[in-house]
Image (cartoon, rainbow, N blue to C red):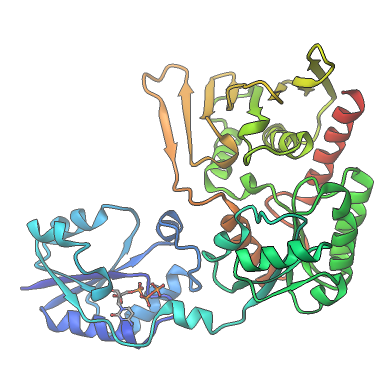
Length: 433
Ligand code: CTP
């Protein structure tokens, strides 16, 4: 019996999918179709898949052509499948030509011509597109335009700046459709606004956008007072939209997995969270508040909102300039320290110490795909590694699309009361510092 296998995501099942399955079947007596799992697609950076795994499997099953359907869950699985199922022929579309030649040691590899003029990508782009606009006062986009290209259903269309020249230059640089320096007009035709202008101007822009029923992403901190933040969140709720702060860390798989594992006792009871960051290393150098808020976020995500005491130990140089700070956050049974180097270099690292071991996120922990656990009594480190692409913005946008689809009025990765807590802690640091 000649056994054939083919793989795909089969999202928004279309004629091209049917054709390749049919032609694959004709090449043998028994056909196995591998459908990619959700986590495998996310892992390889394919964030835009619409249909659930169950639906995609069901669509393949309904062709009546597959004798067996399996799930493709990880890179390198094809070799083990070929051996496990004793496969004679692997079939893939011509878009993959050459890419699977290495499998010729195991079975025949056949590349079939793709069906013309149809693809899941094309079908996805025909759905509803959310227009995005950016509010800026310089011509840097923090990777927003490029990152948005990896998320389906969104398009960065326009830019607003108070300065006409900045708006025009930004528009040219990122090849957007239009630039504006009248905020009302700018808002008239956008669904999502990304606000990245200087801190003191953000509140006004956020407020106006929410009033007009727009979803808002703002650089963090959005405002510098917990009360004002509370008011903005309430406005977002009242207007049935979401206000998201750009703390990309909370949207990363690695970080969520880390929080989950730590909370499920990976290293026992938490005793200490040590988080260090050099201001210069964070996104090419950001102001103190914008840098330290990420570290506070890590602490609150790990140790919770019930922080009893916040202290700051700022160090200034001979000229009185602020160069270094060691912030401490006291909890009932744990202590967090945030070490921040302003002009001096500290080693960027996140270390979580528990009663039964230690978790370390080396280097730039704010956009990590990797962490390791050193557990008491275990001879080897446990290593956790996840794919991480770009600067993390795409994962936030992807979550925002889910929130919009589900008509949520609160971000579930960082709840509004958690955000307000971050702001309260930051306010204390600024008052004491
Ligand atoms: N395929 C095909 N003809 C098309 C589209 C896909 O022959 N017009 C084949 C692919 O080459 C692959 C299989 O169908 O072998 C599954 O492809 P998949 O990546 O799931 O579909 P695409 O439409 O290419 O999806 P996307 O646009 O997301 O890449």
